View: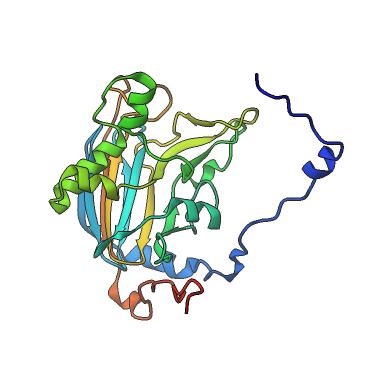
Length: 285
């Protein structure tokens, strides 16, 4: 029998302690809105990649370029992975991004890379869903709290093999891009930015929830590449994530990734993000 745990006499006092924001982000380089906004009118599209429903595709972005993820046919969410284009070991770090910014990201927030690099990989410079904010359920858009739908959890919960979860989609896409066997490519797949996805934690039980995305055709989110990037985007089998998930029941739509080149003159005084300057001695030298 489970032992009953009773609250101590000072429980209310312990619970009333004021919260402290974990990181003083005032020390981070400020978001230079003038710089990014001045780039946008000069941008010229240089390529595009259509991501088919229940599938994923890769794309490459050079530092100083902009990539835009577009809703084109219907309400659809996407799972985004990013790597250093020259080193798959350096990849998007959703947990640190969440700690430095918030559970959901928008214009002015950066996507940070994994340790030991810990540098900005991309900066969000425009978001047509910025208006959404927080709804009455505590939900927001573009989360870095979820992981990605995967066939292992699906098999554990439902006892079936489903091959078009975002984890599998991203694994196939990276395998096709790099030539790695899919079982090796899978090891580089990581927690995602859930693009356009509307999520939060329930106010009573604090369980992770999803609800139908507010994204509509014509909406987009735009990123400035702070380093050379390899990206992979999955058009989630959950569609707009308003009902079922990890199956073929929900209507799904493609997503479009566009790559833009700003006027190089405006980038003359800009430089790519540098690796973190920590010595990596860890107290041993």
